Image (tube, rainbow over all chains, first blue to last red):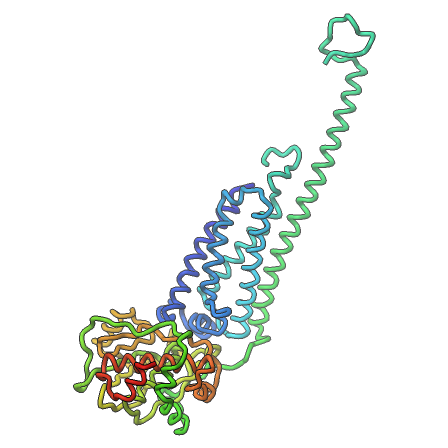
Length: 154
Length: 310
């Protein structure tokens, strides 16, 4: 298993935690200091105070924090080296959960709220990046217990 | 390896195998190598297939995102297709019957409301006494675009109506976000009279988008600005009860009020069996109790005793 999936995943999760933490702070402080332009299409306040900003009363920003916190553990390089199928499948499933949420929120931003939040977009990009690296690395690199004969890198 | 053939008994073992043995060994090795090669090829093929699935999955996701963006940019499927319409800064007049209904909810009803939905309560502070016109001053700083302020104005209006009167009365507005429209009042342009306290509302912005924010409406004084910044960092809404108690943020979440007509919210005030009615009533009861304790010296007695008994 090469090192790059763990390194890329960890960096993306740390960045995601930062952005989601900022959005969470803004959510609970009335979003008055949200650093984002408002030129119509880009309007963070409109997005972060919309009805889509919470799911069953839980702010989406908090859900983002939980997502990146769990994913950070799963993306650490030592965890990537673990061969247990439960970890590999769990990481993949968690990435799919993130992808589904991003697609739902992206649809909501584009077609229901009619505004884009740049901070949210940063979270979406990081989540898509995590999905891409997780899917590729999981599918391209087999587990340790299933080496290809003759290969010395397993 | 030495040969085990019968004819070789007593002979010194030779390091070099006989031609037949070598031929047999060579055949066995070739078989093993062929098997390994087959296995390796099968695993390579499986790995390649899995990798292809992964790449296809990623490509599909990229495609879906691209399609969403393209459809949006092309102008198709535009959600509600509406625009964010700003209210007049002083609001639209509210029917007198609606205002009378809001003003007449018994304090005992407000005080009996369950407090489940309350997320922020007034907090005591050791601030300098806040007075205006010789009376304790209730300072409210909000903004018309702000949905949290929109939620907070409901209980604030109800509570203030127990201690004085508005003339002119507040108008009806909504917070600025189309998808988060919260029906509410605006305190801009109102005048409040009370024998117990002075009410100073400051609506800093309208709900009309302008540049990177919203069009400014009222400017806080330097003293108000300092107090506001020092107490809650300049967040909306901010309420100071005579310098003795502050409400640093909205008492309840605005989300249940979103997209409702003003009349639908007004109809639930005083009805503690609905979630919206209960949370507005409970919030108003807390404000009344705070005003009684921090500002009006428990006057009017009927109001304050009913509030405290809750």
